[in-house]
Image 1 (cartoon, each protein chain N blue to C red):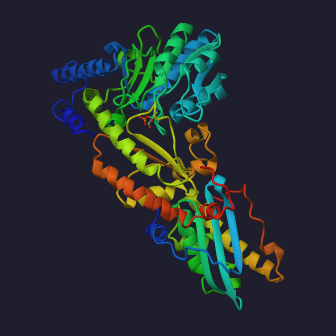
Image 2 (cartoon, chains in turn blue, cyan; image 1 turned 180 degrees about the vertical axis):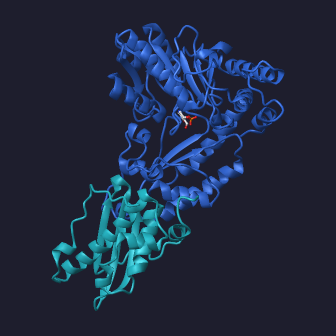
Image 3 (cartoon, chains in turn purple, red; image 1 turned 45 degrees about the vertical axis):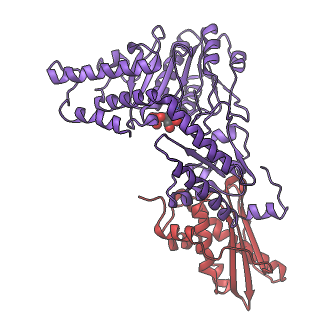
Length: 384
Length: 144
Ligand SMILES: Cc1ncc(COP(=O)(O)O)c(C=O)c1O
């Protein structure tokens, strides 16, 4: 968490431990803080404060946005939803359940080998019974950024509600709900150095929002439950800080990212995933042929580098990441993936460490890999 | 809690018996790259004793550690004893594996069997076929 976020939240765990629903003065101070945080978040997104709903995480925001739009649609007999194959599971599993249990029809658009869907493809998929388009702003594994503004325009024209999971984008690249034609947006605080377990759902005035947690009148009756004041205040502080420094942070990250990519793509039979013309500043996703990702992560961890992978072993399932499969990578290549997420707290020395460690670890693992050896002997064809 | 025991991490970080044996008497390969695990085990046999064993593995940390431990457990042992090695014994020797990683120890057991069968086949040695069931690629054994 950022120092700013921690400092912002501490008073609300201590002296201002009031419940915003209480009439006494401590409660009212908490209430003021809640509304100030709402105004700050709204300003960062180009929204109005009364369009901001605090939730417990990005997943909750995704769930509520999608279910709400689906149920509003169903009341008008519209039960078709458009999304993409590489959404976060908070979206995909929600859609899956709507399909299975409530008879919705879901079209998942292909994201091509570069991991970007086009507005024209969205337009072509819209039907008279489409009630929702939900497409992520930026992908969490490969970092590709979608043409959200154009997709939003297509949806606006067709009068279809447009939701975007902007968990990976907010605080990192410019996001403006008005300019981008967004009806609903999800974000999560821990992606911009805020606390974990707190998020936001933006819902444009005029778009109906159905509550899924019933109870008290909090969040204007759309999300019951006593507000997590300390974390909400910290989230707003973190977001304000990220947005204020967005340009300089992005410039620093892009420089570091591109230096690491230039070095790691020198590794033979490797592949950079994503589309660098439409990409988050700090995300790197690569595949290395002949090795499995988990070993890579464990050995990098020993060298003080925390990374992740889309391999099956790291997820506890038998299949590698659905995102890597969605961009058309064969299973055997997807198993050997590495994802590095850089933040402005990383230094050029960290980049040096990555540049030194990754080739070494890849070579070490390849040297004990029967797949790699067969490829080197020409018994098996290289894929990359 | 760490994902793996210290033993697993030791055998992963410092795997024993990595390599190939160019003039191996038996070679066993199991698993497939699609699923993310392949183990290849090489054995040298003299007078019914496994005098040397090496492995190459494509797979996660526990697959590499299981290969390493399994080769240690059969090195210098009679074939009859190596055939008795179970995946459970490999996992126990590693102070346990997470439930969803138990298939790594199964692969190690199967790779050793496959290498011994290859040795028998190459040398025209008679054996009880029921001792060598075809590894079932679709079956995933998950034990707690
Ligand atoms: C794109 C995307 N959507 C949704 C989520 C879920 O957010 P949370 O963990 O706050 O529920 C994440 C977080 O990992 C994400 O990356």
